[in-house]
Image 1: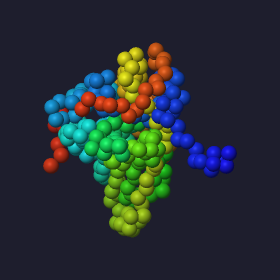
Image 2 (image 1 turned 180 degrees about the horizontal axis):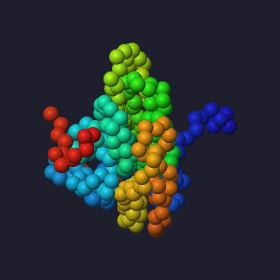
Image 3 (image 1 turned 90 degrees about the horizontal axis):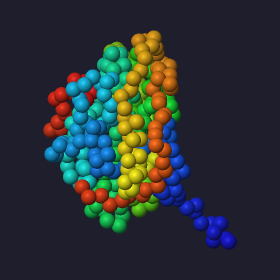
Length: 302
């Protein structure tokens, strides 16, 4: 009894975490999610494709507001289960903004689709085997959207007329999800940041690094990995629903420099999906598999 009382609490398995959160696959059940990139490529080729040594998001010729998919964040290169690939049509993890128009476009761009980051995981049993996962951030979920919008609003209200740097970090949420014996080797890439450079004569706080802020985004991570054909079909429907084009009605708050959140939950969030199913597949399953940007992409942040 004494030994049992002193023993640390057992960490929940990936299966128990997933089964409790994925009883229904409505998009409103998903804040953050993980699945192997190889599985995402097979299930959703319209959102992400591997073309030779380049990993791209198709449909870049269409207006951003009219196409679905994901906002892929990166630095130009990614290892896909050990294979080095170039990224096409991605958003740089760090950008510089110099005016309100740039800021407004950047804000609307990053919130227009779910975000996608690449996670490299190694196991202690065999460090030579590295698996690449897609980490999805559902920007249409009220909790996630609120954290990003409030982070941007708060820094604006505190440094009006001054330069600043703001970073959003997802490392803790991802690292807590993987069980002991697995290591996330590129945790520093699970973030994005922008720097707003104001035309201020004396920018002392910025010069001395006092206007740098970091928002650690928190949320529940869902396991969207499965080897079951039936569950894979459900995951596909879920991903299609999450990444479908966002249709919003314009509002007065979209046309002004405001420190309040723009758009109602009803406008940015639709949580209907059929069929509904449970997913309990293990996440760590065996899988078979100067920087260039796409010339097609007109967006200055891509």
